[in-house]
Structure formats: C-alpha cells, structure tokens
Length: 308
Image (cartoon, rainbow, N blue to C red; front, side, top):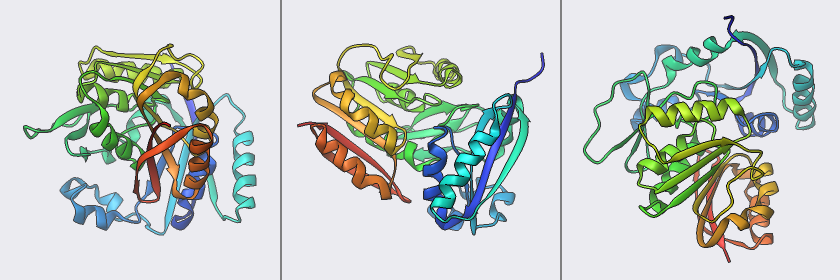
C-alpha cells in the first residue's frame, strides 16, 4: 500500500524571532518541529547531549531557526502559507517558507538521528524506542516513539510539565492530559505512580501514536481518546490536569476546566511563551484560579494553578 503523502511547511527566520514564529505556527498546529541550534554549545557543556550529538547539528547555522508543521498533501497548502505570511508581515518578521513533500514513513524516521535520551526533572529519562539505555537505580525510563505526534521530551514545554508532574503525582492521583500529542505526559504520570490517566487529543493520529506508546511502555492504566479540548473528556473530577498547548487555547479552555476539578486539583499549564504570560495570568484570575508556582526555561513558561 502506498504511504500517505504529507507536506512539510518549513518556515525559517532569524533565531531572535523564534518565539514569535512558534506562536504563529501554533495557531495552525500543536505539532511543531523546531530546529534551533543557537545554544548547542551550552547544551554540550550542561551535559544534555554530550558525546551523543550529531556532527551535522554541531555545524548547523546558529543564527537562524526553523519551525515546521505537517499537513496532508490533499489540503490546499496556500491557505496555510498565506496565513503565515500575513501574520509574520504584521509582526515585521522576514522569513523563508519551504514546502517539502514526503511520505508518512519519511516523516516518522527522518529526525530519529537527532533524538537521543534526555533527562527531565529529577527521575524521569525519556529514551527513544530505538535507543539502548542503562538506567540508574533512581531513574524512571519512559520509552518514546513520537512518530507523527508532538512530544519527544526534548522541547522545553514538555520538560517543564514533566518536572511539575514529579511534584504533584502520587499513588492516588487520577490524571487528565488535554492535548496529549505522543502521550508522553500521561505515560510519565503513570510511571510516577498515578492510579489512572486519561489522555485526549483532537488529532486521531496523535491518539493512535499515544496508544502505541502506552503499549510499548507496558502501562495499563492510561486511556487515550479523541476530543476537541474538553468536549469529549470523561466526566468526573481529576487530581492533576495537564494542558501543554498554547496560550490562546489555554485561555479558551480555562472557563470550562473547573467542572473537572475539585478543591485540591492541580492544573499544569504549559506551551506558553514568556511574552504571553500576562494574558494567561489575567485569564487565570478572571476564571477563579490562583497560581501555585511557575517555572521558566529558554523563554517558555509552565504554571501550576488551583481553584481559589
């Protein structure tokens, strides 16, 4: 059977425009592929990649960054490119857009050479399914093959969420993940000891990938289903809720999320660029929540809140 055809829409600009570029591209898709090598030397010194780094990455142009989304080949790409151009022109950002045709198999495999084990939080280690890793006694290994869904553990937003999950998940926790992507946060919660996890995404491909990753991690307490934000979420009260999406979608969701919360529920919000924190703070207060804590990394923010 012929592989499904996809179009990669890749937009490149100066690295200082990355946050704005991500914000614009996030309006079209939650599944962003980000190429930013500006801090690669710092990463090496910090031991994030170490000797595992690929030489082509080391030699990459560090003055520019690229953000890609993927759309089915039968969709009119001009709608996407016109939207991107209009938004970036309004922001006075110069950019270059490439359209790259590829098969599903190509997409699923082309980036694997750059994806290596990465530690997040104090105990979690996200390991690609095709890599071998010798875990330390205290480490919790999460195996991932994100395939055609967002969430490898390498992006700041996922790392920030997982770091907060380590603080809030316990053996009695019932966890909800809104916009699950690859299922990584639900799997992290399960392996941290959560009693039951529910993961939802509007993209059926993401749900399929999540189910496969759940199976590969040998966890049986995660349910993955399709839902447009909260529309299809199982009724009930959850102890920990994660939403690693974008500021505009978080703001749209906040008026309705309290019906899934009790007085002690912790809601972890991420996918927020620092420039949008003020808008999210305003919505948090307006909808009857208070901030418990927030953490930042490389221009991204994650906020944990509870009901007042």
